[in-house]
Image 1 (cartoon, rainbow, N blue to C red):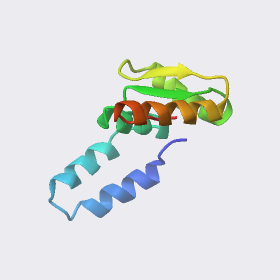
Image 2 (cartoon, rainbow, N blue to C red; image 1 turned 60 degrees about the vertical axis):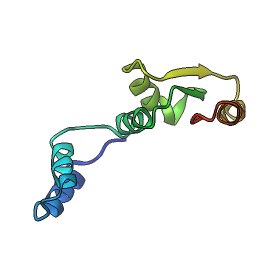
Image 3 (cartoon, rainbow, N blue to C red; image 1 turned 90 degrees about the horizontal axis):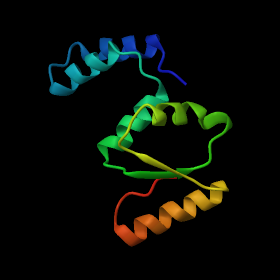
Image 4 (cartoon, rainbow, N blue to C red; image 1 turned 45 degrees about the vertical axis):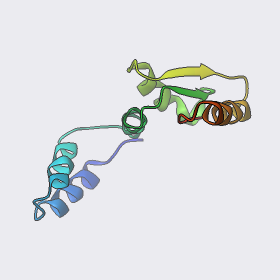
Length: 101
């Protein structure tokens, strides 16, 4: 899943009249070709997520590709998707950190 160039150009055009610092960030984003999975990983890193639990396959393979390209978030492989949710919930309750499944 990618952000289309049309969406990026419309976002850049909408922010051209705005001189706030966020408009420069929008135009910087418009010059990059980022996939949705890369945006997701960057947002998780911005929230200081250290671990994610999951089970690869099908629709989430792009997320796993982006996860493989970075080294700050560790993935915990589970046997079932529900186990990932319970593990992330338990981690969040026990540590006070963000749990992601």
